[in-house]
Length: 99
Length: 474
Image (cartoon, rainbow over the protein chains, first blue to last red):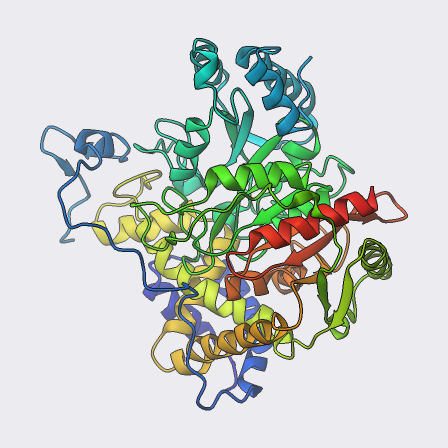
């Protein structure tokens, strides 16, 4: 697979990534991401038939803990760190959802 | 007079009562005030809080003094401290004060350490020079025209410049070891799972580890003993017994088998190559034997790393959306546009580049060719190291292919910057522990690091070998 990354690809990826890029960013990223992908394509030359993927390097299974209720972060403390917290309602406030 | 060049000596003085925690803390704050203007290692300082904690420590009975009693320590700006600014050097977390401490912070404080402030880094630890910080670059204390490396450049510089005797960084692809090497200090990345990641702002969760910067291997061993161990807040923090990492440091290099893959040295700076050979010779003179090893897939480590790390980053950084913490755009009138504008305004160019790359390699039609393939080659790199460790106890390499580069030298070419990590990323892909120790200087007086990689959860042998190199080269 050859990485001929197009401007349209970059616009589509930005949508998936929830990034609103400027025209300049789209132009720069089209070139830079294309270069990086072209470089990364060398992995495609490696024979990996029958090789399982590594998604983690844990020595064993993840450590489990007892399923018991313990104290967690205080809601007011968490809401205090939000740009528009509404501690009186116990909620994060956001702009209107339906345009 | 507080000796800020050694955790061991400083803690010995404070534990014995020869020096108060307040005096130790003030010495660090004075050193920061005197030197940091030209270096910019720190991005958030909280002198009042640090001195308050020092005063509390000074009221403790001597029987309650921990192994790090009164030792001032700096934290990379991606480690959470309750109520303290924690911004990952990103605009998107401007003003963020977490409601909790990272587990490493809790453990340091239980041992008596004093957090004096947060150090600069590449935004979200994405970079190799600390130039991707939204708060401006850090300068290398050895030569202020050069970068300290990255991403934990501020933590490396703070120790190298003598402002604090130790600091913590995070290492996803070399972000502790590379700046340690370029600044001439010791930097340790523990085995994946050795240290809890709870409270570390995540970049790539299968690669990230927290570790210390110090002047000596003995100090690194001391700090690892404090930081290591399972944690109910991190299911990946392994339930493996914590060894006495200081126990074997004096055993020397006699009988230690050092694996070397010489074909990987092609293209390194000649002075780095010469310094590496001198380190190997010093290890041999100390009783170590050299073993030629083959790491045939190591040459793919950089592309594998940048495919895996960016994929994980694109997922981890989806949480920064202007709702729960940090920055929110003032422009948006709808929820959707609030997400988009907040992220465009809040993230810097390198973070966006990596989110874009990671999103692309995970997207429909490209997943198998890039992400899955990278994960398979990651397996082959792990197998290379497993085979090598049947024949040797540690693997030696230069930490970086060149000494510290100049500010601005690589900022226009992301791919060139990525290649600075060629020797460090494999330890993250394999999960193995690795350490950078000073291994010579260039003709311009720039530090050159030697990297030793150990077996999983065998930091003891790796630290013993590192202490042997330290003794042989000094």
